[in-house]
Amino acid sequence: MRALLSFFTILPVRGASLEGAARSVHLLPLVGVATALPGVLFVLSGYALPTGVASTLALGAVLLAAGFHHADGVMDVGDALMVRGTPERRREVLKDARVGVGAVGALFLVYAPSLAALVALVAASPARAALALLASEVAARSAMLLTLAFGAPAEKTSSAVPFVRAMRGSKRTVGLAISLALPPLLALPLGGSSALVTVLAAPLVALVALRVANTVFGGISGDAVGTTGELTRTVVLISLSGLISATI
Image 1 (cartoon, rainbow, N blue to C red):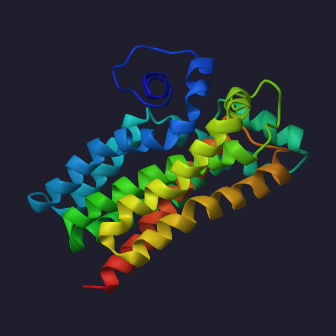
Image 2 (image 1 turned 180 degrees about the vertical axis):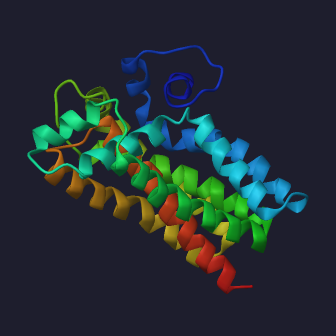
């Protein structure tokens, strides 16, 4: 876990190599617990702070805990999707440091609905919103792991390559079990319907992401994997906000 936390978060743990993190990638969903905790604290401040303030601080804390690494991936994918041309051309745009309108649009489409859903959840119940945020973060990392387990890197130099290689044998089995079981377990206190949402969200988003990545980029990349996780958080928060609001 130390290697994973070093690579996927900004927590003050000793640094690790890409290969070191890859060896523990089957535990990636557990990283979602670490990145969610700062957000959970801010969500619970919704008992004292206005819901919009608490929710904005919570989502910001979650993104900051991950070093905005996956948010950067969302921007890169957004720009690449706006390009017409071959998968090779789109992969070139993924590596381009410049920011275009596609990046801005992608940020809005991914994070604005997440924030709106979190505001609704905090308004309904900060305690239940905290559980929803925790479950959504773990589901996000679970979707990333599923993408690595079933995807093929678009390029041999992709940062996803060592992680894909590591998802074999018993580690693959353990990783898939954690990815499918942990999110619904965390969401179970919110009700059976909420648990069902988290069971389905990670596999379905990962499936769609793999289809798009294969078609548009010729395979997965680190940016595509990170974007899959961010989209999964959005899907889970939106779904849970609808379910929880409907029960009030």
